[in-house]
Length: 256
Ligand SMILES: [Zn+2]
Ligand SMILES: [Zn+2]
Ligand SMILES: [Zn+2]
Image 1 (cartoon, rainbow, N blue to C red):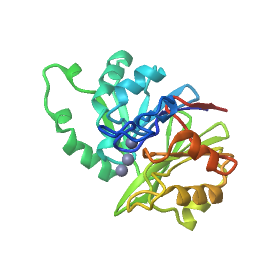
Image 2: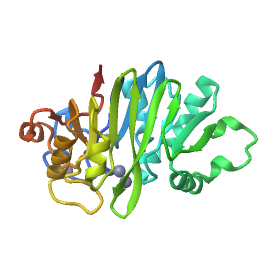
Image 3: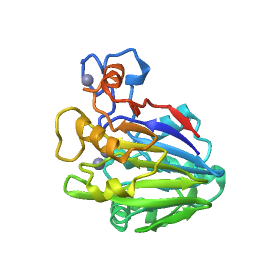
Image 4: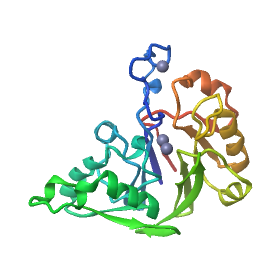
């Protein structure tokens, strides 16, 4: 299994437009964070989780060569507004790409991307996709995918666990709390990636301390925080984290 962090930043991205803080002005490329997305390759299948506004740049910069399926966590703007750039993959692969998400997410996609459903004389002008509502485990080839509901402030959104050949990764970029049942459910992961917006508490995201504590209890072999604000400078944040918890950067690849 191979994962590539296509984006690790919160909704504004880093640098944030107009901000002159030391992180937004940093020369360290690890402090340049696109909006959150993950690319998972397993068993010859290529899966993207969320298509943020930076999607085209992410694909070109980090070598996303193929997309067999897309998993959507929810339809906040920072997770979906690169969706139209799937067009190139539909065209190159000459296929309709399946898009998985909750029924609520897909209903919202139909509103936000209503042009996908209009009759078009020339189909190449819109992504050719098949929306598939999921509320339980399913497979993409021999990759087992488990959608998991988590709170994101007042909303319920999905995180995903992907398993292949006795390897497993959990991806939960937007999550405001982790209860005992979820900790129980996420035992035994190789890699766990969890929302850790910033130091101060936030109504719709875990903060750093809350995320680190949840990651400790989940106890994956390797843990990452994501969806990071410009308050969390890469090296300074990493130096304060316990063993086994890592700050990722855009383009980071983990393969096992
Ligand atoms: Zn800043
Ligand atoms: Zn969100
Ligand atoms: Zn988000």
